[in-house]
Length: 228
Figure 1 (cartoon, rainbow, N blue to C red):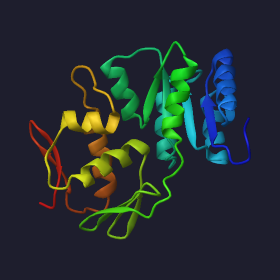
Figure 2: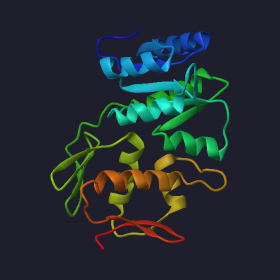
Figure 3: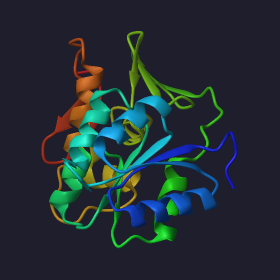
């Protein structure tokens, strides 16, 4: 049963049967769901309704779901985006994350796994004024926003979690394994550049106006947050 205060989830899915199942499960779990069956209407709904979370299929009629994800990010959409995928290779995972998605859901669809992931991403905002600080860089835990030299930086969920982990361990070299375990919560099989992708996103946002590099690469080991 949904209410006026239920988080809104936008489902963009061409397969009508699957779309209806996703919508039903979301409503049964207490969320408000909106259905779109193609990329164009999905983009429009995202602008009009500003959903708390977006679920989209990697394969959409007329357009790649990953292209749509990039368009959503380019349009300034910061809500978590989860991608439905049929395959689970490292290349698929990285392509999904490089498009700006926060996570993925594997087919065949399982209600329990899907709702578990939805709950993870739609946990109520932390009612806190806690902030992490590193020089001029501030991370507001309650709003999940970064502020650097007075400039507000909007972050996706994974960008926020990655920056938070780095700021909780300033000047400490963190290995790729530590970052994967603490930010993604599971290990990526084989070689994956998912961390590099998200480090690049953070650097682009933080160093937007030419600020000095704070997130530094320690070749062969991992990353460290330090001034120089």
